[in-house]
Length: 431
Image 1: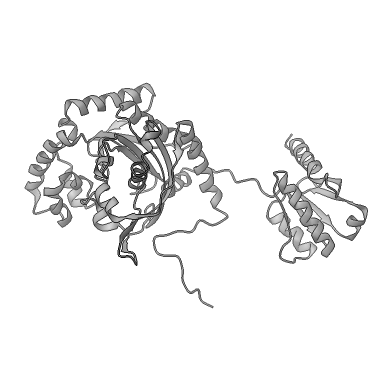
Image 2 (image 1 turned 60 degrees about the vertical axis):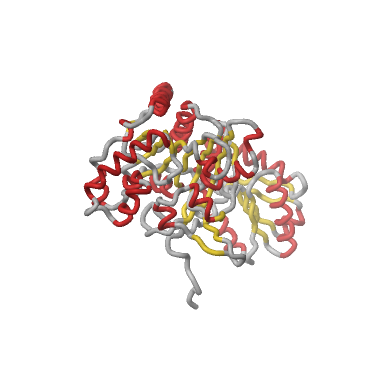
C-alpha cells in the first residue's frame, strides 16, 4: 500500500535515533544562556501579519517573497513566523515586561518558516536558538551578546568560524548614507535586478543584501557605511570593539554587513564559516533600538542574535565533532510466562523510579528474541524471570559486557540493590 503523503518539500524529520544530537546542542545553549542571565520565552508560531511587515520591514526579501501568510476563517491575516525577534518583542511590549526591571533578557528556541528554494543549510521549516535583550543601549551589552555566542561555539568544539562586525548607524547618519548609496546605484539602473530597482528609492541598503551575482558585483564598489557614522554611532562602535578586545574575542570589521532585516541599527555581526558551502552564516544579530517603538511602544533599546540549529549541526558533522550518545538501557527484564511478565513490569517500574532506565517486553517476543532485543538496545544488564525465579524469590542479574552474574531478591529492595550493583560494577569494569 502506497503512502498517502510524505513530508512537505523543504522540511525534515528528526528521527528518534538522531534527536539526541539536537538535545545535546540545545542543552549547551540553555546552560550558556542561563550563565549569562537569560530566561526562556515562548511565543506563538503564528502572529498577525502586520507584526512582521512593520517589524521585519516591507523592503526585505523575507516580507516581499518568503512569508507564509494566509487568512483565517475569521478574516484575519496571519503569518507563520519567519524569525524569532518580532514575536519576542511583541510579547515584551504586550506584557509590559519592562516593569519587571531592566534589562530584560530572554532566550528562545523556535521553528521558523520561509518559502524559498530548499538547499543544503536552507529549509522552508528551520529552527533557531536566540538571545534577546531589551532596555540597554550600552556597547557592553553588544559585546556581551557576542561573547555568549562565542561561548556556545567554544563549548560545542566548533572551529574555523570568523566573527565579522559592522555598524549600520542610526536613522540620522543612515539618511546621509542612503543618499550616497542612491547616487552610486543610479549609475547602474540598467544592470540592477527588478527587486533592487524597487529598493533604490525606498531602502537602498537592501541592495547590499541582494543574492544576484550581478547586483553583488556592483555592490562591491559602494561607499562604506563606517565613513558616514555620526559621532554617537562611531563612539558606540569603537566601544564595542574595545570590549571585544578586553574579552579577547577575535573579529574583523566588514563594512558590507547589513543583515537581512530592516529593524537593525548600529552594531550588526555574523559568525561565518566556509565549511558548509554557500549558506555559511551560522549566527547573526545586532542591535535594533527602534523596534519596540515601531511596534507601538516607548523607546526601549534592544539587541539580540539567532543561530540556525540545522546549519550548526551540519557544521559539526563537517568538522567531525562527535556528539556523545545518551546512556542506553540500564536493565532489560525478560519474562517467561504471564506471572513473570507482571513481576517484570513491577520491577522495571521500581528501577525507573530510582532514576535508571529499564525496559521489558511489550510486543510478545519469546525469550530468545527478548535477549536479542536487549543486546540490540545496548542494555547494560539483563534479568530473566520465569516460574523458577518467582518460586525462589530471586534471580540472576547479568552484566551484558563482562558476563558476571549477581543474584538479587525480587522484592521491594531490588531497585536499591540493583542501583548499588550498577554503580559498583560500572566503576570496576571501567578500571
